[in-house]
Length: 546
Image 1 (tube, rainbow, N blue to C red):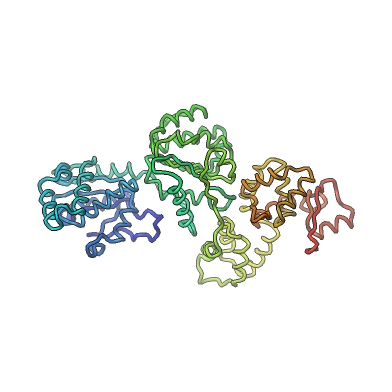
Image 2 (tube, rainbow, N blue to C red; image 1 turned 60 degrees about the horizontal axis):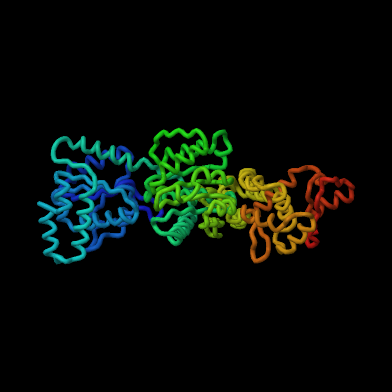
């Protein structure tokens, strides 16, 4: 048989092809099948047709099984001699198992046979099954499994063809497929380093937390630039075929701040899940009612990306009872408290990349052509260390340094150690600006003075300055700005640099006009020159660095 139009991916998280074709080559190879394959290829539909090389020994090959699992639709061409092939029957059984387990869409084409011949079975199908019973035994579990697969597949709605114009049949197949294939997988990342393992962690969480029929809300939590959206997209691509309707709502925070932003998000949710039906939403409350009424019986997968206010999930996915059994709602946010306040108890924390993953991602962006420019290992190590496992930083640094020579690397790294990159800083600052005034003050104090100090010591100092440090620190942890590591407060180096940069920007050229001072030379100049002002709220010096 003809081979696949491209090789199978080694990753279990990738969809290998759009369509898997199951057929008996001697019946259809030289006419109908070739025309169907060409028509699918012309429409850009990636179609897998198994080759004889994949039929090894008595068992279906792993490559063939992966092709079935990785497909979005299986077309079964039932022809006169289909059931005479134990390989075709084994393919059919595996396809029907994937239909039950993974919601694979199965589309039968009855080519010069009637559906009842397949499901009963009758005529050539009865003769073929009698031959298998004679060979393997009437009570053979394998034969019973094949009979069940024939019965189930033969009962599905499909297309019949007995005589006439095969081109018309192919047009009808293409039309039906377009309905099933209208969902387009999301672009995840240029270099999805470390994504597969993180998606598998979330999938394990989904499997452990609930039964198949329960509705589950899952939160992805972490700081800006950590890869929450990337993980959510990869997860969406991997599980979307299991649902009747899906929708990925990007940039919920930004969109909801626009005029009628929440209403437009509600309309998009309904439109995508209900296959582009134009349902007008006039206000948020009306949208809530419409979502609950139209989606209450559907098994769906909505993803709400970058949520920062409780009103957003309340308007788009108010509770599990809004949706049908088996639905999964994914919400990404920098604020853990927001997720738990919405009733999301299943929260996955997105982590920084491992050292090896970080180096791999950085080098992929920094060295598009590794043969042209040689860079010292210590410079690469400094850049990777500076990013400290944050995917956004690794991507930005790598792309910025790409194609540059060693002197430019050295200059850029010196500059980055003093002043943060604008792109990274703007992403991280979003979390800071989402804080209230008191939490901002506590964050800036920790950034400038207290990173790595004991929490009890920090609380004592802040409380003596009139802050409610207990709730303030808890909020900063929930917003992924700081972490509690065995009683000590820590923060990512780039988040600390962002905090210090906010203070420096208060008055870039005159430290005496800034709210916080931590550098010995700044304090010394101000005291010696008597240039301090009322703007200065705190001075803390580390005597070991003075």
